[in-house]
Image (cartoon, rainbow, N blue to C red; front, side, top):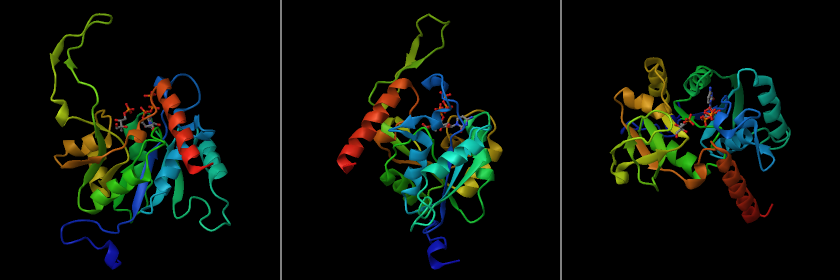
Length: 261
Ligand SMILES: Nc1ccn([C@@H]2O[C@H](COP(=O)(O)OP(=O)(O)OP(=O)(O)O)[C@@H](O)[C@H]2O)c(=O)n1
Ligand SMILES: C[C@](O)(CO)[C@H](O)COP(=O)(O)O
């Protein structure tokens, strides 16, 4: 073990190798009919490729495990090969980052678990990042890694809410829903990915929590472990509905204009 990877006296994980699991096996029902969401293009490039590039852009991330639609592993491999840098060039493929592809499951939770199962030993820190958040800036990836390296067992990037939030009672379809509470918005956050974890804690969470949850950090919360939030970024939004795709195209076009290509 090098000095850099030894646990710090404060319980941190400085220098630990980082792997990212990218669940990309969803259909994208809310986006509308078509090919699986992760394979839809943004600026002519599949969303998944943007997401892999976003993880590989971080100097910390040395392995990406892509969790593909169960019947689409071969297609995903060939898409990734087609977008990798030429193998012979310096930093070919994905630069310093290796990429593995495994088949996913019925739910996001199952897909993430299948990605975790494929992780080789030696990666103490694991990021879980939605393929559906293709435009996350690398600074957010690095901030999440840094917080885990500093000792947090689970880290989420999060943003304050712009809207007032109401809690409602369910009502029959087509009937107005009774409002029962207005939570204090200043203490609420909208949570993004990549979420970062101590690997052992994340695996324990996936082994322990079997009912449906919408993110990995909430599974860790259910273990009674402390999850912490760091600032997220507006451009890390999830492409969920058709309007999100229009917004993502606009953000990408602005980036390309600013970068001069
Ligand atoms: N069985 C599933 C379901 C979702 N995901 C992934 O989890 C991420 C977040 O999920 P979401 O945005 O809800 O994607 P979909 O499930 O594809 O969307 P929808 O609910 O609209 O079908 C996506 O990258 C998606 O590909 C996955 O890997 N396996
Ligand atoms: C993980 C997540 O992106 C954090 O905001 C979100 O919970 C995924 O939810 P979805 O309903 O699967 O899109």
